[in-house]
Image 1 (cartoon, rainbow, N blue to C red):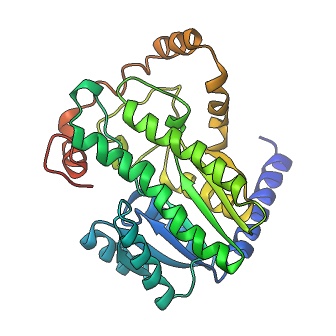
Image 2 (cartoon, rainbow, N blue to C red; image 1 turned 45 degrees about the vertical axis):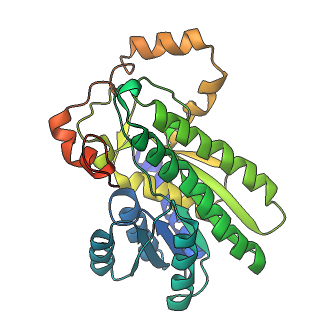
Length: 296
């Protein structure tokens, strides 16, 4: 890359960061699933941009530790319970003020043959990954519309556009998040409230432990996803892939079934999620209730 190209890229990055700081400075940002992984990284970047952060997570010990490490508010939140959301928002408002931005990040990703899934795991995945987003949007949206403005960013996944064997329930939940978000962004247009979706590729967190994505499915660090979330706040858009180079997944639903299945077979992504390394994935699986006691 030439010197002029590097300087141009650096200039664009500085300009992006300036817009992000302007959009977030002094804003109250609530993040679900904020105790670890992508949520924790988003919190750190929001702080760096001048925002004020409240973390919500069902794991009390983990969210208290994360909040203490970052110097922010940390509160228990069960995203599957609308009353828990109301309590969470009430507490944030008392401590920091009304929530300007909600980032619905909480989620779990069970993998393996669908016919082996317990009903409890199916329900918990849909409840956390989809219903939790819907409840969060309703609770925050009502408050934001009443104040005349606000933003919601829902963290979905490229899996919402790339159906794969071994990932069926997660595929269904994340696809639902993408379409739901677009619908309510349209419905709320004119109220001052925007709803965006960020679709990360597979990210190096507990979700991909024991999996080996291949070259077709790019894997990134949490900071890449967090930066895309912050850009979606500064520059609202209906949906965006993280990283941007995975944006091609938005066209996948228009492809023929035969072509998609041939593509997944040739790239071998039709087996990645069917055969995880169960020993490496054991701790995560047990935490989310797959192959162990119920948990998240």
